[in-house]
Amino acid sequence: MTPKQTRAITGLLTQPTKNEAAAAAGISPATLRRYLADEEFQREYKKALAELMQDAAARARQSISPALECLRDICMSEDETSTARIQAARALMEYSLQIISVTDIEARIEELERARDNAADYYD
Image 1 (cartoon, rainbow, N blue to C red):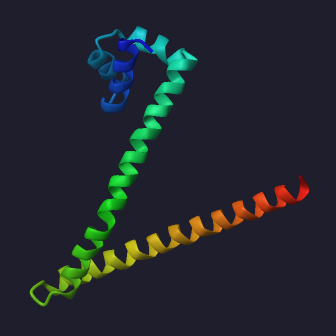
Image 2 (tube, rainbow, N blue to C red):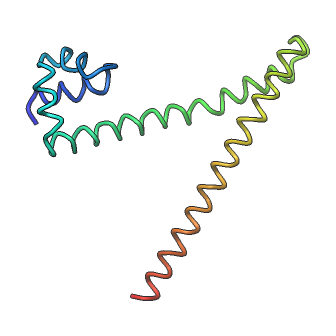
């Protein structure tokens, strides 16, 4: 990867359009299109994008507990209006159910993967 290609990847990850990504990287839109047609560039771009998504997911996971605690505090506070408490309770219930669903799905996937691996070991 050249320094310009590295800047192009950074531009693609931080800018809203390809033209703006090219400008941020100091290259022309045509050069960016040429980079995007290159398999090695595509691999590096996808790798950088995956890392960015993993970092974002980690930050989101770190925010879950404090956010839920904040909603719980609003829900339990006698100083809040009934409307605020109801909205907090509704949000708390919705988010809790979503977390439970995702956790259940992840557990089922892990169970299926273990069963698949055990079956593969059995037939090997």
